[in-house]
Length: 142
Length: 132
Image (tube, rainbow over all chains, first blue to last red; front, side, top):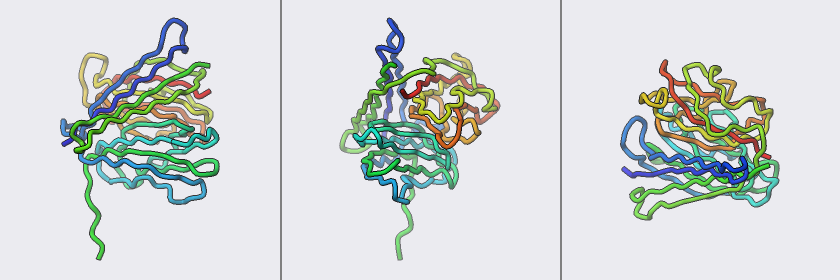
């Protein structure tokens, strides 16, 4: 299994005079409760429009407490454009131009899908990555 | 008003035959209310550990990390749910895991809280800054 490392570094030189902020955190992405790496990585880009109803980025896998990770970035250069992010029917994020998020995604029930929407109008370029514990192919069509 | 610079790096030498080496950074204007890097002991009642007060619909850049300990020294494997203060969980952190996002629930005036999924205690790290 793959070993994938996620690191965040958060800095500020002017938040507190004479005391720069420097936060570092790093973790190796493992399947829940194990030292086994994740199995699948899905990365891509897309265009999101406010009017579209097709805003489900990923369906829930319906797997209890599985470790999955999601990265989403609003690549729009228009500062009026932002994306809302909803997980498990809970609105949690508001990505402005150039902003990103990275977080574990626990898709433990049928409603834990990830939805993204463009606001307030126009088209937003975005990119995403999903790191999954496991993946089962859908049944073949008849 | 100050500037916050978050950088995300994702790397792997064996995920695919093409090396994964990805980095993205941003420059964010921030203002108060804010909270520098802090620790808190979370338990199994979310209302006991509200780490971001109700935001009034503003965007709050939020970072948190599961320390993997109950108190800074004793290790634990207990999982921690990250919830909005209406008790809806949107992430579950294992020991060592972290998250960073521009939190915003502009349809409601809510904050962020931690809730351990068992009766154990877990020490969490967190910080937040309000978007200017």
